[in-house]
Image (cartoon, rainbow over the protein chains, first blue to last red):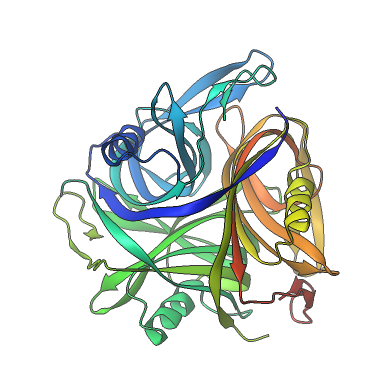
Length: 142
Length: 142
Length: 142
């Protein structure tokens, strides 16, 4: 696919927090489904007690799954919501800092257990972002 | 506390820069106090000459303080402003890159000395975010 | 220069994606030039197949260039657009995660080859951000 930009309008804006023990990805998707948010940009600050993330192997065209069974501070977070399989889908990447400060990160998977998380969800309207398989990368892109 | 979301309205928007030698956290809080900003989402790009950050020990329920006495590029930053002890309070996490590129990070403390910093502050109105002690995590949450 | 803040107005908002093989920095600057975007805040999620970034040596007042010739997930991204040499200029820092999850990062240079990238560009109007040499840091600041 060639690069492309779409002009969008600002939609609703929410600030929220998740509960201790929540699944980070699932709860954001659940909120978006409840509110019928079909496109959004998402940011989050907080910490997890378990992190599940992945690295994409370009050669094998599959995600290599990684996990950390420890408390991590979320020190970087980028996420957006689009539609995949007719439902709001969160695509998010995060950086996680450890007890010594050292950082790891990747593409977020289900299984990130929230210790505390504060979120901002910025809806975008006037655009329709539908994920479909992309032959060049092997990913589902809009 | 259970997870919860609040719908907010977009307030004022500022772009700014800090001066070399400024304290990163203090100056953002000072600006918000001066402008009576009570809720905001904050982003920053730049570098520090000294970094002060922390990791939360969930078992001991206390922050373990870390620091780096070197130039770091800020390569991740997530922050929000709410009210704590009747004043605007910045909750921010950052990732810092070193001379070799390797990254550390955590919950920002006072003591991050700005080398250069460019900021965006996005006020949110229609919400009241007051930090109070949370029994589950030992943190001050809204 | 002393710290300073400017109030801005929200301008246009775009969501976009780059093509596999694009230069991350160049394509964002090209889009902003095409649309006459003179001030913006930019965020990006995705992955690169080659990363080019830098660390600023405060003593020598020059950037030390670093690179990674591997697939990296972008796990932190902060960017803004201002005017330098009469053209839209992207100042961006990013965190990149590796196959083991370990993170590196710095100030983005040309030469970051996009594998996949999803972007948000938020224009700001009512402000004029012109980069000029700063004697204190040796950087081009607005």
